[in-house]
Length: 96
Image (cartoon, rainbow, N blue to C red; front, side):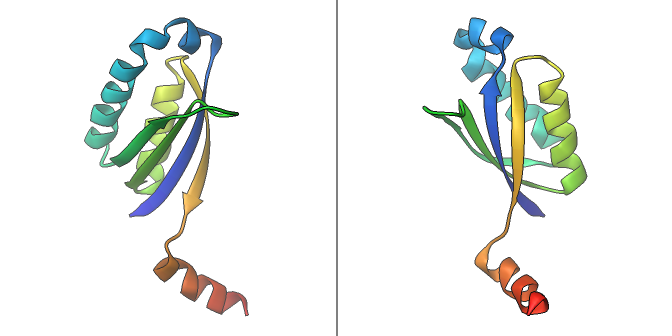
């Protein structure tokens, strides 16, 4: 399993329907879970991004979950693959 951090921004549609955001987040968790993705945290944020989601899952499953969520028209996402200290050690070692 890989860890991903997604930075999300509301679309015009998403912000117009902001009151539904907590329900949409819960629906995303359920949908992602069915795909084998564990949503570790969802944060509503101030600043450039409106939401931050931390997830664990296979690359394909996380990608599918984000594409499915994006296709609903409420959010746009930018996703980062995150590495733990244990994971990055061997990667850096191979780069030396």
